[in-house]
Image 1 (spheres, helix red, strand yellow):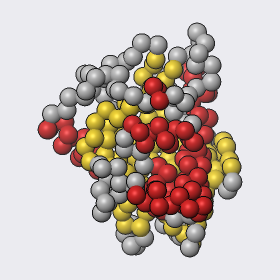
Image 2 (tube, helix red, strand yellow):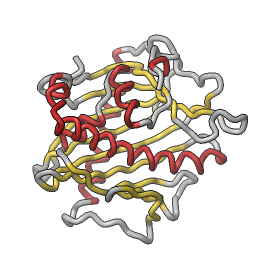
Image 3 (cartoon, rainbow, N blue to C red):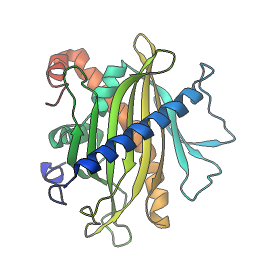
Image 4 (spheres, rainbow, N blue to C red):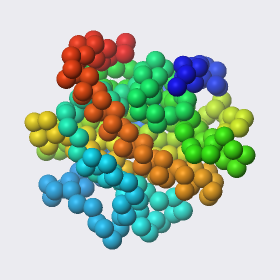
Length: 268
């Protein structure tokens, strides 16, 4: 994937007022808290279970499964991911974090879940003390089958991303990442692309010395019924490739590149 696909913002410099920034932070934090409440309900009995009457398995790999809602209440079915990956919560958060254009390039090189993208605004960036806390506004372009044909336009997204490690009510530490589409007067639709929307949450929880439970939920509006059949499996693949990224980061640490990752854990 060429570096030119992860370059300057196609919208120019995003102008955000102080009020805009406060509103975005409040919105992201409130949505974040809502997702944590849903997750605590999901694991309430200590053994998360997926109701087969409500969810249909869509994809699976290496112990991780993605389900689609059987009877959605809207035309856009929800997705649910459950499973495990080896490593730690920190490993998973290393695989997920990408607060700069350069880190987006690095991630895309081995995950391949994006066709292009840019960081439009940074409201909070990682620090040495909080290497996984980040709040950004992003634009990404999604890889879709047949996107180069006259029948299918590329889909892109403008969204706020917030990630952090927090404690649940029982004291367990988890890593969480949320995406939620947003719009600004400056981020109009781009030529040759259709603007789509998404709401996504991913959570990592340590359940063993070298074992992490992975959970994801989300809804995507691909803005077009023809593309829906392509986008839903694509989102499922995105969930699974996030886990792939975590595994790769873990392998790098195991073979001795951990020092490099540690040195660059905070992109400041």
